[in-house]
Length: 93
Image (cartoon, rainbow, N blue to C red; front, side, top):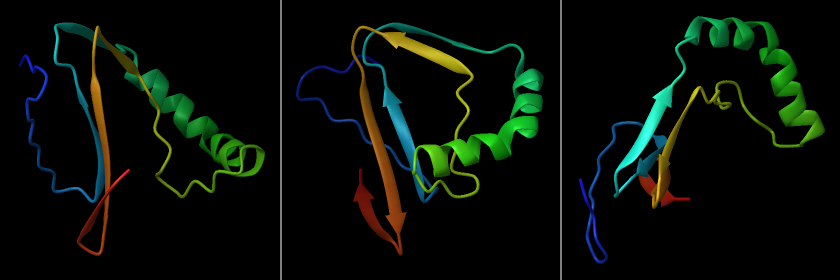
């Protein structure tokens, strides 16, 4: 859907946290065709990844908070919204 300057876009989510990527112009995307390999890698290395995030990078990542990116989206322009809701009060990041 093309979105121009001054346009409004509205979204809803039943999740308490997330992110929305808007690609207002034509773009392209691709997801990995080898998701089982990524799943195996995540299973084998999850503990090491959390150790790196929490100890080496001091991020204090909780269980389930790391995301493995297995695809991409390209566009000339984009918009991103990240949100978190604690106790029913919206907080935009």
